[in-house]
Length: 313
Image 1 (spheres, one colour):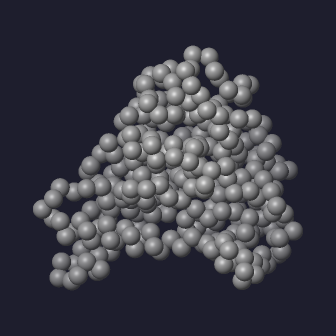
Image 2: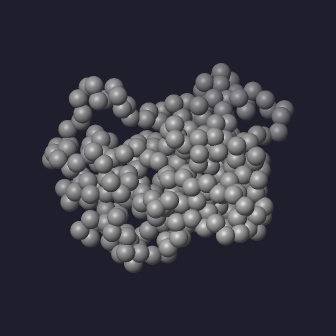
């Protein structure tokens, strides 16, 4: 089923750019009362070729060639960049604070060069281009747009087809069993897990963030895509392998968060929306968007606080 991305004036606030429409389970595309619409299927790296026969009891890693083809995301460069942002701020003390690492989480040694700056466990700062693992923070221009008002979207992929992500801060109202979502459950393994609203486009996704002792097995399995250090995502094609890993005690059922729907953009659409001021793009530490933050209605305010006194608009 395809979902719609459209330009309309049917929302509480008129938007100049295409904003995804809430999908309907019964209608493929709503054309009535809209001047223009575009249909787009979300695109994620396919896991359909992955089978659970890869999951030996010891979960061996791929051979060297595969490791070179698909390296894991090294999150240390994100922390390094955050330190550079903090250092740049200390070099301009006469200027008002700009979006960056929260001053309360930065420790500066004024008697040494900027490289001695350290940052806290939780940080967030402005970046200018969307990237895998970044956050899209809705600005005031999306106030009145019910789906996206004050949302925080985690960008999962930025491939050639277009970027895709999931909304993190919408609370769960029902479980997978209550939603009767068979695509995200195998043999009842995840039936009692809460199901979160991830966006208006039709897709079943999940995040998995294993405990530190389990991380090696999950990362080396090759089943999931790493978004940032210790945080992975999977699609409905890989949920069967996820269930098998739970049965083998590779990862716990509580280490998953499931989403009904996602957000997707055409190749240049997201950049146009960012330039128009609908989204602020931010990088953050993995601790800011851990599994405990999924469904938190206060996540938007929390990230703005970490970014400093300047508002996202």
